[in-house]
Figure 1 (cartoon, protein in one colour):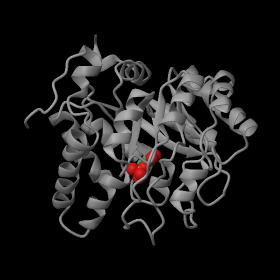
Figure 2 (cartoon, helix red, strand yellow):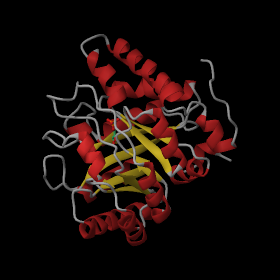
Figure 3 (cartoon, helix red, strand yellow):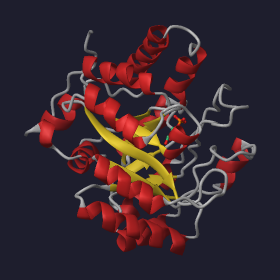
Figure 4 (tube, protein in one colour):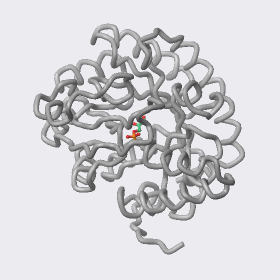
Length: 312
Ligand code: 13P
């Protein structure tokens, strides 16, 4: 297989078939991209380089174009693709965005996959907005990730008590809605809410330790059956390995990681940039090898060969 010309949609489908998750890493500051890509290459792991709208608005990544330009300098297509994360229809501050304008710019810039986040809308409105984006992206041959249910954590106010959230299943993706949503929108991947929460992003809370979330695996199994497309786990930082491994066996083919690599970078942000980059690199290698257990995944995804625990 010609790996370098393989589209992101094909790669995620292959990963799902092999019960492997492709990790996506958010880049809130441009210098983080170098150690993220270096760690993926050194461990022969396949991963996505991602930026979300809030990361060029509330953090330091600049713009979608700045991230694309940095990616073009650093990419290694044996191990990486570029993905546009969260483009909300209604944003974290409850404001309506120009989501079609943003998606259209991303397609022009050459992003290999895009996410539309209509999760703050009603089901009907989410279907309508997602359908619009699917039409635009598919015309360009680009797969679309959508979200159904509420993966909380990015809102300004405090999170409801986690135990209560998990016990009541508040905001969890409904399996019935998931089936209808995919059938009516044609979205390629579905981001699900099954107990996962995003790391905090407000200036006051973003340095704090993230809560250890759990995953309702039985609920995930129902969504997997109903949706029938690769599923995406947002809020990937700090979920215990036992839950992660189970989720990879039940449809999760992409997992998003931001807080775990952003916090070590921000801790050293006043130091020489090389020191902050090395902290990201070390965190990345540990994540890939030990927390996510995906080191060597490029060989597994493309050739079905298991070459884990590579020494670098
Ligand atoms: P974490 O910050 O919990 O890693 O979540 C990242 C995420 O889901 C970005 O879309």
